[in-house]
Length: 146
Image (cartoon, rainbow, N blue to C red; front, side):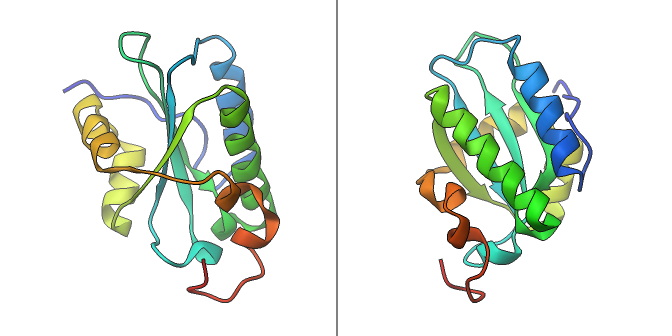
């Protein structure tokens, strides 16, 4: 199974978002998806996120983004997640989310392969962009409130 090189730096939201946006400009995303990968279910205020940008079938390789998004990485992490989701909305990408155990989360985002990414997509669920773009939905709520 072919390995993919993750884009960005784990724990560095601004650098990872900038790398993703720079690379994404060179590709066509029509019919694609943004898959958000997290290690927490039901505790969004503590979550960390990585992401996979999936072009439409046959339009190129997925872009795997390092675990650098979400509240676990402070205000910059929350802001980068909001910006990534807003960009995906402008591109009309389908937004999906999947939750992995912390060990699988790290392994998948650091050493992804194409077959595993196909399984992630199959196990993912559609999600509402407002969960990630509304400030109060990721920060300032009690743990366990989504």
